[in-house]
Length: 86
Image (tube, rainbow, N blue to C red; front, side, top):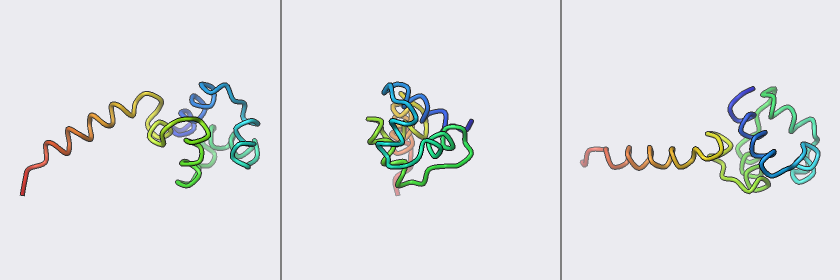
């Protein structure tokens, strides 16, 4: 299972949704959701945005995992602050 698929499954379960229920919200098939979760296919960027909205999550949670977007934000701030001025 890939990272996005694993994170998608965690977020879906956090919201207490079945694959069928999530598929219905997204107007896709249950098989599409299953394929994303198992890593057989990847959702495109537009679908990632729609998935995040349907799961009451941030796109970064789908990519990096639930609760890890804070760590990403801290890293991003450190990188921005550490850049030498020109």
